Length: 559
Ligand code: ADP
Ligand code: MG
Image 1: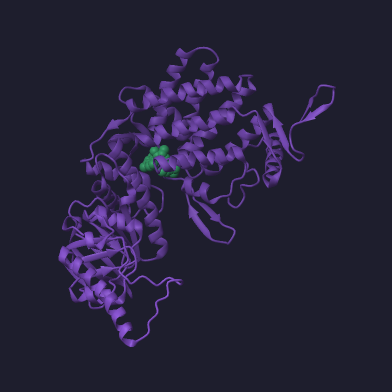
Image 2 (image 1 turned 60 degrees about the horizontal axis):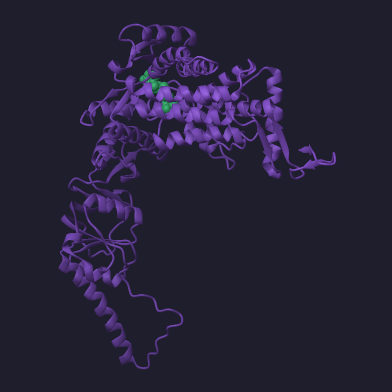
């Protein structure tokens, strides 16, 4: 990069080896790269979406049609493409569903922007129009949504089922939906749902239908000593955050023992201290201990003699869940145990679930704020699939319990929003109006893609959906991809959380605006410079060939 300096000398401000592309070129390349990402996941959208096979460098194969998973697994280097990956990540963090929708919509916003730029509309104007449209969309969406109550279990189950449609584990969908609803309703606390409080344990065993919700926690651990009871009912539970063992002597703190008598005294003292701790515990009334740290065999055997069940080396996250499930408070100093610190479970039991493996079940808790879904299945692959499906179900049910708002599926909200935004556009005026219209049209990519992926004619479907929405009582009509016609999705019980749509609109608009506003890409040396240059060259070739939607390099590895 050279500018004219004072004496007519060029002034170089970039390091040697840097590359720069400016203006329309930079924008075009960025838009192409971003659109390529959208194109890559597009065919997975909807219940009839296809799967992708991902092969990682070590040869591991994942087959999925989950947009978030695909974008997480694939290496994407291009900076603008990376911004689209961020859209998917934000969607996944905020809602846990709708990642493909958000990415496909972002791609379409950019495609429409590129068309406007060809008509000499300045990117800044497009950005402003997109922002206005996104604001209006966020205002309109709640009016399209329907309120629900968390007591409506059937409806919550339907939301879970919609989120899992087309994701593999369909035969088990109803069972998983019920488990997800039970789990979410248990852990809900003053209107908030943190699904980290739903622990998932899994073990190969009988069929998937043996999966169950445990009103408490399952730990893949067994009791410390054989002489401990195998099962304790009406358990009073101590959660201990300190070790129950003699501290190892430090290297520099040597103890000089001169006689056997002295040795005995020393050991007796240690022993006495440990016994005192066991006494403290037993006096508190605790009959079950979960210890986050270590525990001497000696101590364990003393505890066993007193009929106390103990587990050691419990992870910090399990300790927190145990506290939430049993109502216990985590204790650090054994001398300070208060009976009020103890938690409760109807039953604590070690059970052998399959072959040699034993688990400890802490169940029948009263109003537990942490629960466990214990997933069973005939193979490890099936179990993993069930776990992924369950995770999605937990997320969407959690979101609906928090927000209490749902929308019909099958792109009903997109069509409705598109129509209403077109009306709004006519009130905007100026060149921004064109951008608002472009935004409204871009929303139609969702019904189009749903139709395309189901082998239906996208134009026909779009026309009949639009005409439904323009008629009275038509705003809940979405595309039934199985029958190839619009149906009232609310009446059919195919529904999604409102947040899926508000989040998709927000993050897609934000990313598109951000990409549009870049008119200068400066990359300073390093390995990524080469990649960007190659990506840009390829984008240019594709542009010349009139072919969109190819993959820039650095996105290889799949398809
Ligand atoms: P995303 O990552 O965006 O969630 P999906 O592959 O899950 O992608 O597809 C979501 C789309 O499929 C949404 O538009 C949703 O409304 C639609 N959809 C889900 N279930 C159905 C159904 N039974 N009939 C029609 N459309 C559905
Ligand atoms: Mg989905």
